Amino acid sequence: MTFLRRLAVFIVLFVFMIVPLRASVHAQDEADDGTAAIQTTHTARQQDEETPAADTSSGDENVDSSDSSGSGNPQPADIEVDGVAQTIAQGLAAFDAFAEGNWRITELEPRVMDEAPVVAADYFGFLYQMEGNTIVRNDITGKRARLEPGEAYFFSAGDKYVRYKDEGISRAWLVEVVPTNAKESDAPGDVIYTSQDPIGSFPDDTRDMELMAANLMTGDAADIANFEVDALLLVPVGTLDVITGDETTTMKAPSALLLTDEAQISNTSGEPAVYLAAKIGNSVGDYNGAVDGTLSTPDAASDDEEDAAGADAEATVDPMQDTDGDALIDTDEAVYGTDPNNPDTDGDGYDDYTEVVDYGTNPLDPNEWP
Image (cartoon, rainbow, N blue to C red; front, side):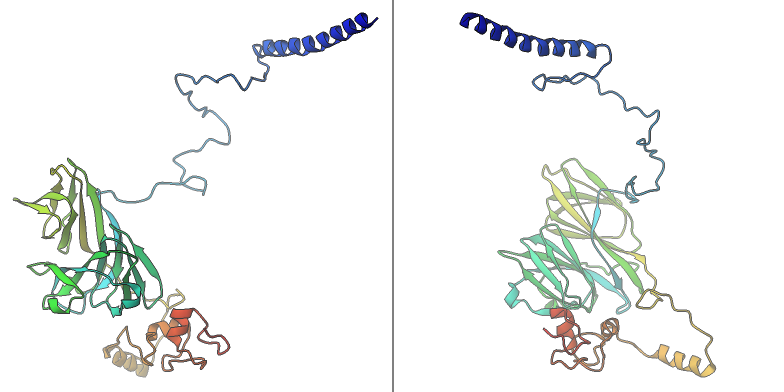
């Protein structure tokens, strides 16, 4: 009886093993007839030799590339590509303080933070990082930027800044437009270049000022347009051949060249090179709106009001005027709502500049202080 029981158990186990196996084989056979079948995870799926074309005949997922509407269809940037250079720093510059100007490059070695002074930018220009890192802080807005080699920052004349190194060695070029009678002794560092000739077609209005940069590998070439105002070509790395008119100049870093015409530059040195182009661009009209962005619409004025307006127009207004001497200029006081005639508007013992710039507290609330 024991043998028969063992035989019966064996037969039952055998049946349970055979039935699932037959069902699996049957399922795979049905797959050839169009029915989905489970595939073993141990079998590698073969990639077709050619990628099948996407089915674009129908379906909601198809996107018409010609349709630029809707957030689900991003479009490329609307940038005019006229060379390999890209703008790395930009700002607006008002050229009404002097009649003629020169391009000037001053090499700076920023100090550590505890030793760096607050200085006012004498002229409009760019700081281009050559080595190490530099932190630039706009003392008016309190905003900072960290520059690494190849990066740049725009300085607005009259604004106060602090420049200090992050760590280790720091070296940067200050590229400015200065009056023709500017003294090298007044520069904040070592002057390494001043254009021999004044800048041609020097403007007397507000302009868009740009610093462009590009890398040129061996065998590469690029064109620089003939700008309205004479530009400055700089080579901080490598060696480049520059053709302007019938003249060919070899520029080996560090070097600079005043551009009075279009130029063709090429790299045949066998080593990578970097060039910069500092230019004075398009004219920018004055803003005629209010601080909140609404356009002002003048009402009809009386004769007395017109006379008063004429007298005001003849008066010279200093945009950097700081009536109360708290280091927060009057135009900024208007933005923050503080009193330009009172250095401590809320009377809490902290002047308006300290609260706005240094600590970010409310200069109008005597109960809120640093």
